[in-house]
Every structure is written in structure tokens, then in C-alpha cells.
Length: 143
Length: 143
Length: 143
Length: 143
Image (tube, each protein chain N blue to C red):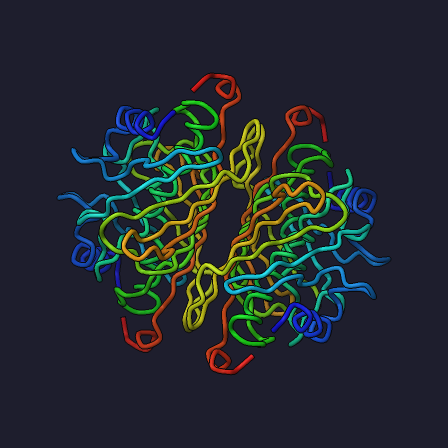
């Protein structure tokens, strides 16, 4: 799956994630990982002008999901079992990129991490590690 | 602060968290913790009828914030530094309660955990542990 | 399995965990959890007289393992997939107790948490959450 | 500080970490991180020939400590506040390397992650993220 195919799939499966202009989307898919982007606007901002923690968490969760989709098959039923996220710097409105890396792709679990960076200055604002559970049947399904 | 005072404060500081009817609110405050509730409706649901991971993460984050507010002072500038969340069962639409416990309240950090349970059957659907950083000045400020 | 049976099993399977006098042992097993103890002596102490983080981590890991043993069957092949641990206070030499609670016991994963407390003053010194992977075959095996 | 200086310091401050031949040591220090090594022998092995989780956790903890030492000053009193570790593959006896990266070095907290890899095949066997608390006074002290 290409980034464009991923985005079409996300729009179909998770219509509530995005308004008319998608807030969250994939911008790159590569062997062993992907890059996802949050276009952080007013609905993601907290007092002080910082992008909210839940918005960054959502980006991490989507990054992991795009890794599953593109590396284990288009299975909308895989579920997140764990995410650990560290918030490190103020995340600023505008594009925020999450670079995801698959640490393990096993039969039933995928482990990934994601560096989340301000588009403006490239600084890491958050880092997360997570696990997706992959239902046994679907691992054989072509993506 | 009572739960009602907390909710008035949250509505003022985080107007974007809730629509006209608040989705997230405090229902109890007690020494060493609090209980927060998500009224999970269509905007929190994912395919398969499950409440989304980010919605449960938001509840965990708010639970920690209400603990800071009520035990360290009404400081809107305290920030989450880490949250680790495990998702364990399908979370169902309707009320979802998060019972928060302060594990440590230090000078600069507060550590808490939260059991997140379906209102319908009382089963734990997720569990999170998190840390809030408390800015030095405000620890002396009365809430 | 009783706590005594668990300790006999641990001594057999993990002889290297303990010297002649066992450092780590189970002191109680109950439905949904267990209590494990570290007898913290000089080999577990760091500069400043604090029990080391790895010693507390080992107690958390053993607590989860005792939960698997006693609730899913005596399967020496189950493995830890994730542990998140927060260190909160100085842990003191002497007995340190870990009270473990099973948050989920599924077909292939067990999620637990553990409160780790000084025996001396009962204060929580660390808290961990973890996941054990349970191999499919052994879930049916009687413990 | 060079890797050799770090190792001399570790031997002095943590004599219990290592036997006559050091099990844990720094092999490289570079701007923004370091590489640490566990020489995994019989005392680190679990049934099935796997290096134990606590041994890998100890490597992660030491990796973070070496980052603090070399980037924030030689302060033996800094303490770990949180570590989240994912175990992904069987870790094999022999050298196991942990490549550490500082994600944030703030006034009072340092956040890092570490990729832990088998020396034999270079595969990632575990990944951890952690936080060290840095006491206020010592941040100004030259290392």
C-alpha cells in the first residue's frame, strides 16, 4: 500500500478522525516503517498554544496502525494493546510529523516506536512506543 | 475543590474538550485521588462499536490533571510528561469511569494510576500510569 | 498452587535468582493476584543505601510470573513482553513487598500491576505494570 | 568523559554491578548518546538459554546513567524515575549492545531511549525508554 492508498483506507474506516480536510494522514510508507502527519489546528490546541497530549497520542496510535496496515495486511480489527508516550517539548501548531519504526513484527504482535517532531524546527516533542495485537487469521491475508 | 468546582474550571480552561454536554467530567474528588467519567457517544466510537484508544487516553490524562488540580493547586500550566496505557477489553458506549489514585505527590512530580471501567459491567477496560510535572512556583500557591 | 509450591518451583527453575537464603519469594497467592517479597540485603543496595532499580524491577517481573504460574498454569516458557516501572521513593534494605493484581488474563496475554512497598513503613516505593505472553499450547495445561 | 573514564567511575561507584571482569561497561560516548555493553554469561541466563529480562533492564538503566554522567555531569545522585521496556526477541549469551540516545536533556529531567541488540546477529532484542531525574544543584557542576 502507498501513502495515498493508506489515506483512502483511513478515511473510509475512521471517518470521525478527520474533518473535511484530514487532520491526520500518512505522508510516507517505507520498508520497516512510515511517516504520519498531524496538521495541528485550533481543535488540537491547549491553553498556552501547545498541541494537546491526546492529539499527539492519536498521531502515535495512527502511526502504529499504518505500520500494521502496510506491513501485516489491511486488517481493521487489529488493536492497540499498549502505548507508552513521553512528552518532551512544546508542540507547535502546524504540521507535526511522526516517524515510525517497526521494532518487531511477529505472528501476533507488532512493536513500534515513533519520534514526533515539530514541522517548524524539527525538534522531537514526544516519543512513543507501542504494541498492536494482530488477530491470528488475518496475518495470512494479503494487504 | 469539589467535583463541581473542578468541572467549572475544566470548562473554562479546556472549552474544546467538551461540546454543549460535557463528554469528560469529574464525578468525585477524595483524599489521594478522584473519579472522572467519559460519557462515550458516537464521536468516541471506532469501527466495531469500541470506544477509541485516544478517548480512553484523554480520560486518563484528565484524571491525572484533576488529581493535580485538587491536590497540588489549580495550576493550568502543569504538564503531562509520561503516560503508559494498557488496553485490555472492549470499552462500550455509555459512561466509562476512571478511578485515579495518586501514587506520589512530590515537589515537582506527581505520579498516578487510573483504572478505567465500563459503566455497564464494571470490568476494567484499560489501565494507565502517568506523571505530571508541576512547575516550581505554583506548588506553594493555594489552589 | 500455594506460595510454598510456587517457591519450590522457582528454586528449581531459577536457581540463579537466589543464594542459599532466597532473596525473592512468594508470600501469598490469592484469586486474581499474589504477594511477592524481596529480602533486600547488601547485594541489592546502591550508593546512598537505596535498593537498586533493577532489584525492584526483578521483583515486579517475578510478581507477574507468579501470577501466570498460579492462574494460567506452571509454564516456565511464558515470557515478559513489556514492563513499565515508576520509581517513587527510596526503597530501604529489609523486606520489600510487591502486591500484584491481574488486570487481564486472556488467551495469549496476561496484564498485571504491582505496588511495591517498604516493609518498614508501608510506603509505595515503586509501581509497575507489565504483560506476559502465554504460549498457546500451555494455557490448557494444568498447573 | 571518555568511555574509559566512565568505566572507572562505574567501578568505583557501583562495585557490586560487576565481578572481576566487568559485566556491564560503556564502549562508546558520543554527542547525544552512548553505547553500553553487557557481556552476558551464565549469571545472566534464564531457562532456555535466554538472557534474563532484569539483565537487559539493568543494561538500559546503565545506558541512561552513562548519558546523564557524560552529558549532565558526574552526579551519582541522579535517579531513574521511569523505565518502559519491551522485550522482543531471544537475547543470546555473549556481548549485547545498547545504543542510547538522549531525547531530551532539560534542567531537571533527562529522557532517553535505548536499542538493545544481540552482538551475534545485530537484531534488536529489547527497546526501552526512560527518564532520569537530575538534582537541581548538580546541573551546573562540570562533569
